[in-house]
Image (cartoon, rainbow, N blue to C red; front, side, top):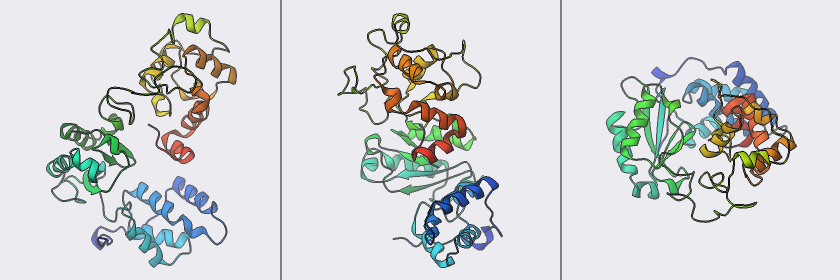
Length: 322
């Protein structure tokens, strides 16, 4: 294992304090652990400090040790052992982690690394001239079927080409990273085969309702299906509002299903969060969703996203909203 050391003193801040919101979160996190086991919160607290500052500073390590009544050396051991913690400043706009494990390397990860060297810095962990971008090579990021891939902060970008990697770097460097949708960068549904599903494509309860099949056959979403749907139609809006939510952030909702929801006047998470069982039945029936609403907990997902956005979603469901 490589030696990992804290950044030089000349870049270390004199002090660290959690923001009010993060301080409340940290206290709540510590209370989750039984009496005498509060030191188990060391990893989440260090990660929250990194989320706030961009990297783990010496002052942050000292603060976490103090909050947990933990010997400083123990917190230093954790911070320097786990490579998820950045021990020196990284790019303020993006720190790109390029997967270099075998499947990604066979599919072109080396070319992605060359792009990072060319556009950011020849050396990993070193920022570009403006301090906005940095990169490193990491081990498996867990989407081998979609190789090659990178992770930027907590999002992954898959099925990359050198050309697409350059576009992503340019977007983040210009402060437009939010315009790049995470996930596959080709026409693929999650980790399904390129070109569409090859199995479990039949309609009906228990079938895999993909965005390629779930609302394109037998009049799903048609006027006849809507008029004959069982249950109560949920309240709708006449046209897309300017602050419409990205419904595809919900698990089980892809671009086609989002489009069908728009067709029936559903654009906001709080609309879905307010659905009654009868309204869920109406949407299931009219859009031929085969029970997806209940199975994927749309109402609960929408409620969390409406209340706290992506950050709250990740805390509640333990996964990234897509």
